[in-house]
Structures are given as structure tokens and as C-alpha cells.
Length: 351
Image (cartoon, rainbow, N blue to C red; front, side, top):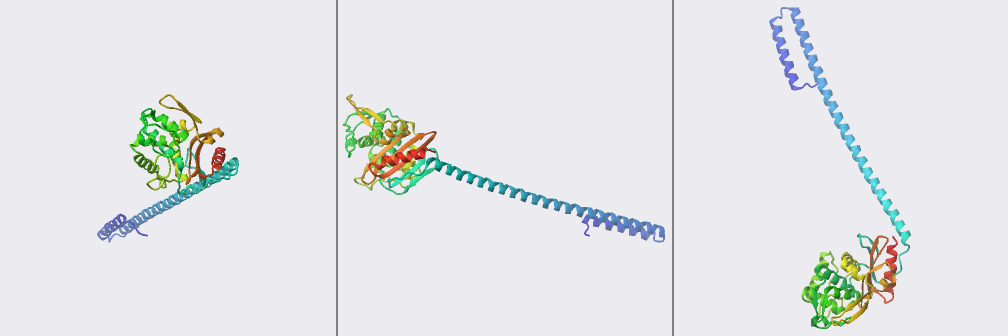
């Protein structure tokens, strides 16, 4: 048995003392016997104390070990609880997906080459077909144009038409140099009827020139985190000098989502028609080019487009039973674009 150092010193001191006493009275047997008994008693007490100390040390070690084992068991229980919660969440998600699939029914067959359907309130993608293929997006480009105009504000400011505004390819509303309109009038006519001369007038008013506005469009696309989108003008027609503009269904949906958050644009794109009043007092009734807007009550926007490269295009928005969806259809046929967009929008809004 190993004694602690203090007890070892005490034992030696006591033994030395007893030895000295013994030497002083070694001629007394009774005295010698008493001293020996005391020495044995002291050694026994020292041994007992050391034993208790060793026992306490062992008990502390046992308690620490049990504490460590308990902590390990608690950690295991927490790990198992987390695993169980994850499994329950996965099961819940799978069950929800099955319920949604049953409510929506089969995904409509579409003829569009590029397409995506998203939840406008979240990041959920409900359906996609070649969503990351780059290509022309035609007049759906005007969604970005409208977004920048609304974000600039002051929609009641007067815009005076200049010669450069009128110099563009069809479709044109026929703006005349010197005519004056509010930004709101021009924006509404552009989003409803898709007039390219109006798009140029808004771009020049906003940035000073079409080229400068295209730079702002590309900067806004980058701010949205888009990497596969490029603009050269505010209307989406092929470029006459630079490389042609392009985007993808996925990134066009992101632009549409940003535009959909603007109340002013939301009010405009759901109009089935708009009375465009010229400065001379003459009015033109403009019918919205979005046919789905007239055919489906749940549709409330957003923008059509067509070029040879882009085919027939449509970004359609809709709302029903608290759900909001955005459908992007690109490179479709003249009849398929309406059928595809409407059937996908209806399908997505069922659940």
C-alpha cells in the first residue's frame, strides 16, 4: 500500500520520537511495551487513513467513468432522436409529394422546347424541360424592361418622344416625334401590346440610350444572380450589330419572379385591354397579346414573345386557392404556346 507523503513524514517523526523515548527508558519493560503499542496504533491509523484515501480516489474515478458513460448514452439518444426526426420528415415529404401528384394528376404533354414551372413564393420547381438551354427569348425581354422602369419610379413623369425612339422594327404603335406621354402610359402599352418603339422610348428615357439601358439590364441580371442571360436591347429583337441576346427558361423565370413582386407591374400585366390615348385626344384600344389571360380566369399575366429564333414564347402567371405559379414556355408553336402554358398553369395550381 502506498502512503501519501504527509502521512509518511508523520510516521517517521512519530517513530523517531518513540525510538528516542525508548532509548531514554529502555530499562523499563513496561514502558517499552507501551511505546511499541503506540507505534503500532499510529501505523494502523496511518494505514487506515491511506486506505480511506485510496477508496475515495477509486470512488471518484468510478463516478467520473459513470458520468462519462451517461454523457455517451445521452449523446447516442440525441443522435437517434435526430435520425428518427429526419426519417419522419423524409416520410412526411414523400407522402406529401404523393398527395400532390395525385391531386395534380399527370404532367401535361407539351410541344415547347424549353420550359419551367415554379412556385412564385418559394424556390420550388414544379416542372422543367431543358430549363438551362440558352436561346432567344423574344419580347419576354420586356419583362426586364418593365422591371427597370418600375424600379426607377416616378411613373407619372412626362416623356417626350424623340426620333431615335421611332426607329425600330415592328411591332410598333407608331409613336411620333414630339408626342408626350407619362411613363405609366408607355409602360402599360408596352406590356399589353408589346410595342417595340415604346420599349425604345422607355429605354432612352431611363438610361439616355438603348445601349446604356442594355448595360443596366445586364447589371440587373447579374444582381439577380443570373449567369446565362445577355441583353442588347429593351425589346428582344435580334441584334443588328452585336451578338444576339439570350437567356434560359430558368433565368427568365427568375426575372419574372422579381417583376411579379412589383405591384405596379402586377396591375398592368393582368389587363385584358388598355385604352392608349394620344396627345391629340385620339384613343387606341389595345388588346393584350396574352391569349391565356382571356381564356383562363386564374391567369393574371405576364408577357408574350415571338421571333424566328425564339419561336412562340409566353411567361404566364396565375393565382388560385392561395397558390401562385409562374410558367415559362419558349420555342413553342403558334398554337402550342397557348395550350402548353394554360395546361401547365392549371396543372400547377391544383396543388
